[in-house]
Length: 229
Length: 344
Image 1 (cartoon, each protein chain N blue to C red):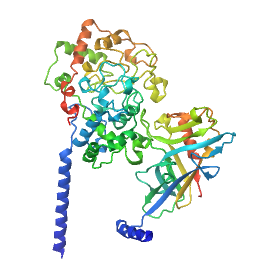
Image 2: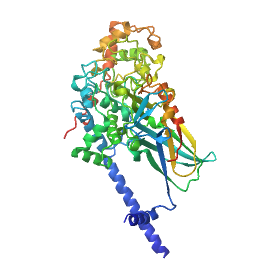
Image 3: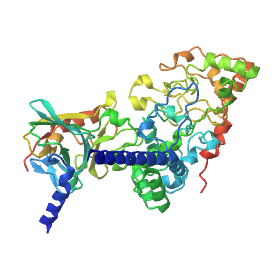
C-alpha cells in the first residue's frame, strides 16, 4: 500500500521536473563524548568534575554552499533554516539541489547575516514568532543554548546563552567550511568540547550582543565536524 | 496546420492578456500610492518588500487600535500614541503600560515614519516592521509576545477574514501582523502644516513667525533639519542625567562611551500637541524647553559642539521662536478620520 502510494507520487511528480532532483539531507547532531545528546534527561560530566544537563539547542543555518576542489558547485537560494533540538525532525532540513552534487566541502553561516537582520519582518523560519528574534533591540538570535549545571549558582542552576549581534562591533555570525564526503550532510556539534574552558560559575548568562556572545558563537562553530551516525 | 497553430498561439496570448488585465484590475482596486510631499527626500522604507494596499492598511489600523496586542487586553498602540496629540501620550512624562506599570521613556510622537532610518530614542529598532515587537514584549508596556499575539488573532474569525482579504491567507503569521502594522504607520504623514503651506506658496508667515523661522534656522535647524525637522542622528543636547532612570541612551546600543547621553533627535512637527518633551518627558511646555536651551545645558564630553556656547534669545525672540514652532501644527493630520479609531 505504502509502496504503491510512493509510485503514484513519483509518477505524478515526474513531469514537474525536467531533470532528476536531488533532495539532499542536511543534519546537525549535538553530541557529548561522541554520542548524541540526550536533552532534558541526562547529566553529563564536565572535565572539572561538575555535571551539566542540556535543555535547549536552537540555531540558524544559512547560506549553504557546496564546493568541489575549492570551487562553488551549488549555492542554495533563500537559504535560511532554523534547527531546534526539541524535536528530532527539526534538527534537519533538505536542500533541493538541481543535480547530483559531487562535493568535497560544505560551507554555511551559523546565524543570520547583517543584511537580513536589517530587512524588516520576514516569514518562514525567519518569522519573529519563532522565538529567535530580540524585541528590545532589533536582530536575530543566531543560537540558543540552555541547560543546567551545579556550577551555576543561578536560579535552578540554569545557564542561558542567547548569542546574536549583527553590527560591526557585535558580529556573532560564524562562517563555517568543513571538508566532507559527498552524500547526506551530517555534522556533529561536540558540546563537550564547547564547554571545555567555559567556567559556568562565572559565565552562565549571555543575552545581549557583544564580545562574550561573539566568542561563544565562534567557539561553537569550531566544534562542528562530520559525524557518522 | 501552421495557421491552426498560429490561431492557438494567438488565443493563448489573448487569454494571458485577459488574465493579466484581470489581475491588474484586482490589484488596482486595493493599491495604495503613498504620495511623497514636494521637496521631501526619498522615503527610507522599501515599499517593494511590503507594497501598500488599502486592505493591509486597514488591517494594520485595526491592530494599532486593538488592545489584543497586550497580555491582558488593556493596552493598544493607541494607548500611548493618540492621534489628536500627534500620536503620543499627552500629560505623562513616561509611558504607561498594563496593570499601571510605568515605562522608562516618553512615548515618541509618530509621523513620517517612512523616512525613519532607525526607531526608538536610542535607535534600538532598525526597521519599521520590527518596531511593534518592542512595546508588545516590554514587560512595562504590553508584556505580551508576538507568538501569543498570533495565536490570539488566529482564534478570531473576524481577523482570519481580514488577514485573508489582505494577504490571501487566513493563517496569521508574525510577518503579516508586523507588515500590516507597518502599512498603517506608513500612512501617518504630516505635511500640511502652515509651514508646509508657506513653503508651497499658498500661505504666508506673519512678522513674528518670519522672525521665529530665522531664529530657528540660526539656532535649531542643524539638528532639527527641514523638512522632517530631525536629522535622525543621535545627539547629546546637554540634559542632566535623571538619577531615577540612569538612561544613557544610544550608548546602550553601541557600547561606545562616545555615544553616552545621546538620544535620537525628535521631529518638531506638531510639537504644539506632543508635550511633554525630551526622552523622559521632563519639560511640560515649549517655554521650559527654550529656557533650558538658554540656561540649562550641561557641559559634558559628548555634548553637541553647537550647544557648547549656549543659545541666547531675548524674551521677544523666545515668543517669536514659539510662534514659528506653532506653524508646524498640522490639523489635517491630527484630525484625519482615516487615521483614527477604525469604524466597525
